Image (tube, rainbow over all chains, first blue to last red; front, side):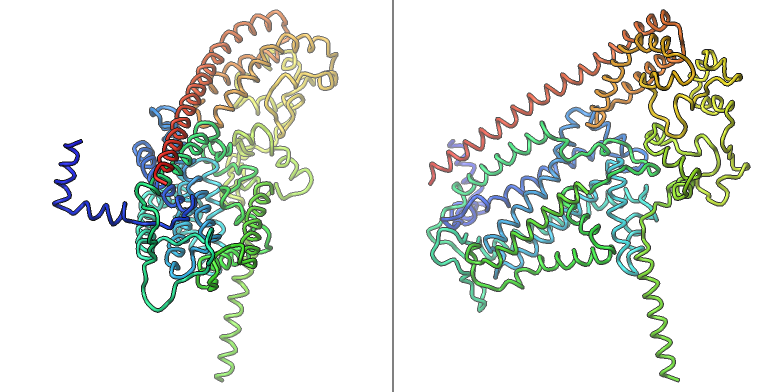
Length: 367
Length: 270
């Protein structure tokens, strides 16, 4: 113990570690009424880390070549010690990442935490959502299975609906007229280098703006639930008399992380095939179109929306409008009230939108 | 003059836009890599389109065996797909059918030609498609031997005896096939098991054309012993999955215990 203290002192006199600990951990105060939803960000950081680690381990054996990709994934699943575990962690983790990210965004939405001065927090988070969807889509092709091949064919085909640039965009994405060997090279580069770099940069930006604005106070258990921010000058939202991040909230974060891990591991070990239709384990065959190829669950609503309209361009435009509206929400919703029950119009729209998304997803699944 | 030029320019822009809109609306998502036989015949009515409809859902479609595999021709060139110089064979005559199918099913052809059915071909005996159907060819199974089908030509008595002798082994094959398929759908490398079962199934199904009950019974016993080895391999996979689940239960329990510990520690600081 004495040795540890001496070591800490040795470090402290050199880099001022004590000051950093006081400022960023024990002295970093959070609102007293902070709730469990605030720990979703930490859970997401753990998920991202797990994805990076499992992805790196898969990279050791995975071969991004149309002739070898399926066999290399099969080799990982059957011959590499614990390869099956790392593959399932990576594949199930990608789905859980989208799910937890959506929960995180919904909590921010319902607690009105996107409101001024947190427009940047929302925007960086929203871009992160699209990047996470992008990394999932590009990763979907890599096993070069029937599901990968045909889901990518359908997904990239949607871009055809964009006037003038559509066909060029499709060809650019695929590296040819059809999904084929050049596509896997492009998607591999996007999946392991371009998008992860983007995600890392966006996470850094998200944490930076969080540090600059301070953690928002939840609108629950207080009399005044309006947004107190004034647009006259920069102000850090501090919480005098709040609870310290360390050890109090760090332990709450840790509890959420372990609960998440328990659920995640239960899926990995007991229901891993929840996210794998049977075509996921058949090698890609451009001559055999599977009967009911469907995108992943988080793209089902988009898929069904495209089918609802007589023209794909209209379907894409409707989705683009909806996504733009969501991205710009902090600039559109300028009301000061943050408590969801005191915002009936917002609550009705948010629940309606959520139900519509769930309904379209279920419809897409069974259509 | 200037007004006329402007009007021309407007008309050109409108024409380009109309073409683009039409192109967008006509995007039906057809796959160019689909073989031309299916693209053309699939859209045809009556007897020209019927084979494609029948082929869909057949064992051949399931295994990626398309029209050209039997009928020849060039599946990538619509204009020349059915030219003799591209290897197009067309439809075989009644007596040519066994030879047609036997190009791939070599062993089955041999068994068939040695069987009573095969020996009677020249005098109007059944060819392959009489029992197996044409285009909508399903996986060979004991279901093919049934009163309705057999009694079209002769009494069902002898066929019923043969079917009875083969029933048990067929049941084992079907059960093993289903277990292998289950593992395959979980990403397990079942290649070796599939090949062995395929070989044993073929060996067993070659008895279908035989009418010697004693031979069928003896051969079935040998095949069953081989099938038992496959069942043992699958039992090994079952045990491996069970061990993984136990490991999973331990991992989940550790995570829950850690969550509880974090919760209790959090409470002490409250």
